[in-house]
Amino acid sequence: MPTCPGCKSQLTHEECLAHLRYCKWLWSDAPEQESRWGEQLLRELRDRER
Image 1 (cartoon, rainbow, N blue to C red):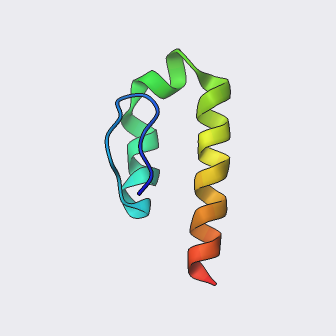
Image 2 (image 1 turned 90 degrees about the horizontal axis):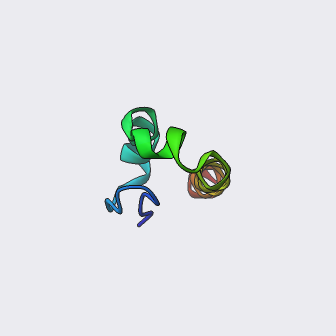
Image 3 (image 1 turned 30 degrees about the vertical axis):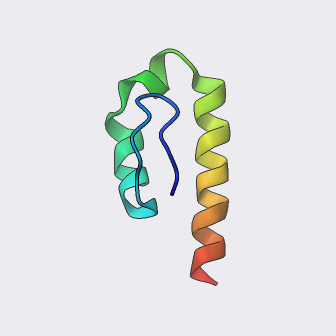
């Protein structure tokens, strides 16, 4: 399961997308890390849908 790099919450893929919108750590402290995490998450979601 993905883990939020900001608050270390374990999330399902469905929760991740909503979580990205409200976990403020992601937007303030580490936008570069956040975007990499988001890109990886989107790749995983696409792979799961295949």
